[in-house]
Image (cartoon, protein in one colour):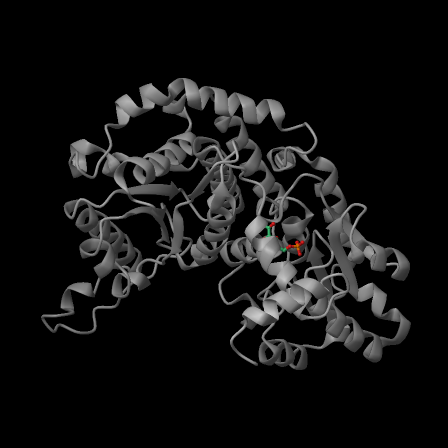
Length: 463
Ligand code: PA5
């Protein structure tokens, strides 16, 4: 199982001004945490609670259908093109980057075991979209369009472009190159898929986008590129069983949620840095940033009081960002909690040859890059601790489906528990909806005319 080390947030290690009296805090919050965990687990099967993501480790039916479809299309496509944004893309990107061989799309078919390349379009930069569509053969591409609402402007505009090009290239056969993942019943994409006869998968009811990575939203693209989804789901399930433990001393998601909550509310440290020391885990930070920001950044609490809460998540990458952000983290405002993610054993051991004896670099020869990245992670952790900056470390024994499943699920539960501590609705996103509605208005969607006029009057540009 993955491990959490929280020693460097305690007052014993970083002093009482910045550190927490963690054992007494754990004792003080034991009952509250117990009831939060029990409550989440007792509500998870009820409709409208948005907790169905807690059941995704047990969704054997989806796993079966995903594997069946992936086996059916195996060998037919050179590329998978995922169209989606936010929660419909970030989990897929994070897991593919972690579990596929690095530089996957540059490998030969043999090196990829004849599995397809995979591309995620999660933005609407016209140059980027055009360049990608011009550089892949769409007739040999399976397009997985993912949107829970079925109407997100970014995703649906991409889809309209891709569908048009596919149809022009393939005639009526283009349908075989599309698979849609969307709500079971509602939304425009569901309607189009029904009318056009696309193969579809479901974003389950009561699973929000940012909690959907272990539904067909993530599992389908993973299976299509040959990732073993059973391993991932097993990691989710085992972590879920571990996190059912209502004792804070035994529950790493509750511990990290409480640490972040107390650091924010008692110590004024409301920035949460996610810093894996593994390039393969780089996009886990992007996924975490969305999960934490959209879930915890809220204007009102559950009592309807205006609170404007939410720790700001920041992504960083070790060792790269030692040469970018660490100066600030060590010496700037002491307002952050840093989460390191470490890898126990890399797949590769890479020797540094003894080819130079110069004083400044000779010591590197004969060591491994593994030694170097681990030394840098240790050095950064000790330096931050010396500067009395709170930091925790999550360790994955290896980067594989089992541990990545555990990590992401643990962070989801941590987010849900933190939301309860802040007493806010973790699962809505009114701020995102507002921006979506403003876009619809500016793009001339029917029903948004009044809003369009008001927005235009506030714009000070004609772009
Ligand atoms: O987490 C969320 O709910 C959001 O980030 C959504 O995933 C994002 O806005 C995309 O929405 P949809 O899947 O409806 O296209």
